[in-house]
Image (cartoon, rainbow, N blue to C red):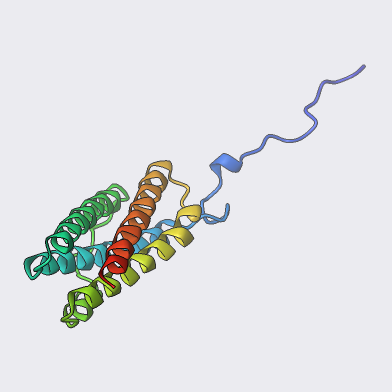
Length: 161
């Protein structure tokens, strides 16, 4: 008599803990999201201050666009942090004071672009480790948006030199 038995046991991988499966755990994700939120808040404040002091209309428009984008990501990060059951940080990253200490608008823009590149690196390392599909999609969109902003700022800097 032949018994029809499965050739392998049932796989429960979809039920495994995120950390066990190589993904970032909740606490690590929340820490990273809050760090990004503080950085985005700093970037938004730098862009706003730069817009107010701008003499060049193209520079001012670029800063308004960057500020709107940074504010958009602040809102998304805050929403995702609350969705994960935590309170968003209310701090502003140290980047803000460092950037405002740079009086030359183009040097400040170059510094802002380095900050945007830092965010890109953080997102590139975090995103593959995020299992949550909604958060993953938001972070990928944020990553692409920052790459576009870096390219726009680099083009402006290139045009000015």
